[in-house]
Image 1 (cartoon, rainbow, N blue to C red):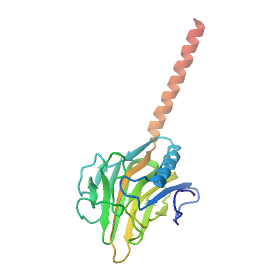
Image 2 (tube, rainbow, N blue to C red; image 1 turned 120 degrees about the vertical axis):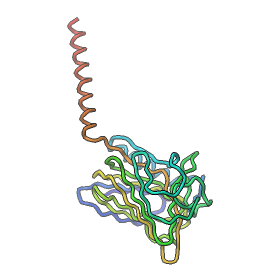
Image 3 (cartoon, one colour; image 1 turned 90 degrees about the vertical axis):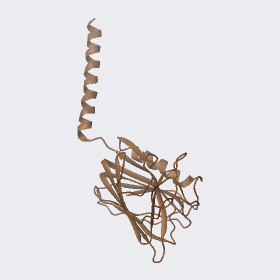
Image 4 (cartoon, helix red, strand yellow; image 1 turned 180 degrees about the vertical axis):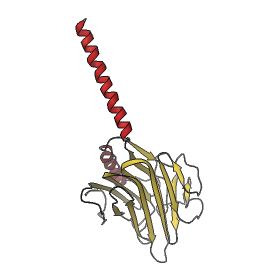
Length: 244
């Protein structure tokens, strides 16, 4: 396992088979609120995008901008279905939001020029399952509003593939964190679990989820066959020109 770190160092755990090569990318902008300069988080995302792109295929970023505002689950998006479990505390806190309470201590949008984000408040804990339509080797997202005085732990698990598990870094004063992973073993499902400290309730958000889309074997076969036909056509054209 490799790690690329930005911002403050923080402990995390990863458990995976020896054959798996997993790289973790994260950056923290503690206390930076809506519209701020997410310097460390953006740098981590840039490194993640470069690492994810090395697996080929394409990358898809879900900003929630086209999702209907409201509290509903499952949430069917482009290439991704989100099923979440949390309490409904209304607009600015729960479900798909286009408003925010304000400041760095709650969930908020991080998309430049955007407004939408997905909120997760709860008195006990919250969870979400991200089911991908296609096999991926990468998954990354922005986490907003988390405070370590209220949240005890946020765990991300690759449900299939290498089945790696990670403890996400937590900010003290809310703000923004980008967290992303790439894994040599493809996966199709990611599980996120948050737990509050006794007597506390944290409100946080998720935005700009990016994941890779790896072409299916049949698609690769068609691409390879297409390249082969192009090569044959070029050779035949060259022979014809020589004979003329």
